[in-house]
Length: 200
Length: 200
DNA sequence: TCACAACTGAGACTGAGTGTCAGCTCGATC
DNA sequence: GATCGAGCTGACACTCAGTCTCAGTTGTGA
Image (cartoon, rainbow over all chains, first blue to last red; front, side, top):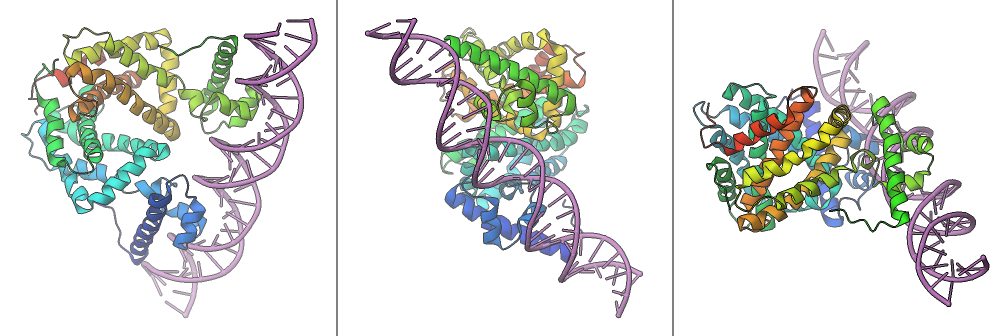
């Protein structure tokens, strides 16, 4: 999946990037995103200001740099689903591969979600990254349905599926991780699967 | 809908705000959002830098200040739909009240959408504003369905409906406004209404 | 070993956004 | 119609994010 040449340079680069992100996360989660400057982070991490911006596209990216990979993971998982499966089910299965990520460190995932939710600039940046998820997933889904990538129907299906993921994640977050994420996901997708009368 | 005390002060304030936004839009659409500084705008508009930030929360807001009202308009239109209507139809009708906005100045609307799409900071800011649409609409939809605002199902329905709106708008934009927006909207919502086999 | 490519810190620079302050204007009240 | 307070204004200084350049260093491949 990743495009990693895996020379010594690139490996140390990835390691340093992770270390810096970790240091940054500790400051952000302790004091709040806006109350920590880039200078604070680089001082704590022992790198120069210039290098920080070589590792991350911006301050937000030090928190959200992992988000890009998730979209690719969903798209890849979708590509692996059997061709006969209906779109909603295939997307649901592709998406619930993410549960492993949350199960590995639920407390950290919750704290991350809260920080993003309460920090406008982080929220905006994350939403923009999710637009890229949208495009990646649409490119896999469209041929599956025999439609073009920019067909309205493809866009709606992808958008609705990502809304389902988002709704489940948000509910999971507000319940402090107590409700079952997989169950929430299937409840969310069921809304999209039911026939017309989602009536009152 | 609006909370306008309508004293002389507030009316001139609104008028000035509109004028500044118009001047800003001319610069942005001509040179691109990032190539125009706030100083450029205030020089052209004949106000001080400080005043600019009193009228707009940020540079992006000079383009997107109207976006907030749209969410309120959708929520209000939804509240006015008959109680017996199913959720998808009610949302579709609520949303297609926006068509009047686009019909009034299609060329301007297209140009605006293009600028937002090609400018990351504008896109991010717009997406963040749409999160607020989400909340406003959920608050109207939830009681209609006899559910709480933070119920997963409510969030999914609102998110999916907004995805439908977005897909239709985007398709309309890429077709240079040639395809019929209302038709695109109904195609988009039909995907959400059909029974399970949106199969391959 | 050598030459090149990629990385680094240092520091100057641009531009967004905030806070303060002193002066002006609107508009209500006497 | 003079006055007083609230709200607006421009000027200006300040912080911080992000870009760019430059010179020195280190990994990489021949």
